[in-house]
Image (cartoon, rainbow, N blue to C red; front, side, top):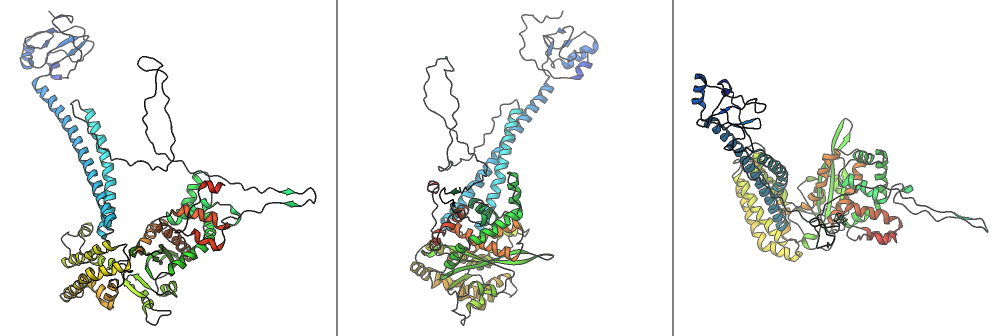
Length: 618
């Protein structure tokens, strides 16, 4: 007799789960369709099997599947207990899902740990650089590599954390979800305006409904937002008046503008200049961006704007050039610039001369002067520094040699060569990471070059300690500490070169320092505290040009190159004095028309003080 579903011995089933086993259907057992079974099967408690009738075939199936199912009938559904084999399969599947979830969690932990390690390495490298200065090309290259690696690891850590959460949610086992520890965000700058958005408060208690509620505090969440650029048209109105007695018409004079007809304001002009020469955005890209914002300015219109700004800022450029040429010591360097020519491009040059007296506590503010030329002939340095006499820190380029002639008028320029250039030649032969990047074995480095780098690094360590001291203090420290190191290095270089073939790359690096009487120019810094060990000031000034070459690709003409050099002089000088170039240019263009020539030095970057907005309005 089949047992009824409301038998008191049978407890109600709250959750019914079943696993289909088609073999049982063939053995005469009830089909596992689940719902709509017309007649409840008979229950056999001894074996736990469900039968629709008994036969020899069914008895054999009972003996075979007696531990397989315990059938329960309730509400038209059949719940089955699994056999040992099926239970083992289900258990293994559950363990596999749990293992996958744990593996995803471990991967997320590993990715987060790698991102944290990379972040800490980057911070350590930056702190060392801030404390000790730029030690070598290896450290600068390491920081760039760490920044790129950190970006990729942060993205990978986020993806793995989301995958771990999804895997933990998909499995029925209790796998603790991985929670990635996010980096601590710095607070937003205090000078940014704050806009309070107060969420509407309830008027009554959410628990008892009473209206006797009082404020006990608040939670504030800050969200950084940006306001899109706003364009506006300023209408300068000059009203006309007529006299009732003499009928004469009077009208106030038109104000002066930064450019003729004044169709573009100072802020717009400064933005175009800084975007083109400071951020290296070609004018066609600016025109497209302005058009997307609803303001259509043609490429020729923007180019005309740059030309007018060059003329307007010429007096200020002349003051900067005069200040640079008044220095007793200059840094000089040049870099390549593609120049558009018939049938392609030709290699032109952008030259820079930097005045930076900060290493020896000089009082003069830093400034940079740029020039453009179609080639690298020696006539260009002669023209740039005509009438100047002093110390020129540069590389061993032969184009400067006419400046070092004893019979030069008004006098000979003293050469001070750069130790960074000399060190770099040894460093390239001892760069393990560089060999790996180029596919060479890491062990293929020169022990002599590595030792040379180590010896030169000792000089750099000393220079970091005396940076910013007075001229006398720097000279005394160099005579006491650096001179013995220099003498030992010179003797060691001569001994090593004598044992090498002249075709040996290390011998060529040694010859760069010793041949053509260059050793005296390399060691001139020992007797003059004003001279720096390196020419890094000029190389830093040219860094933006290297970035610009990838954006604007080439200079359109020689006059375009001259215009770029003109603007680079203004922008780089502003940066060297810790001034925002765009804000400075906008204020200068607004104030120059009403300022007498005698007061133009007030607008130089090291003298400039921005007028507060309330004073402008007054």
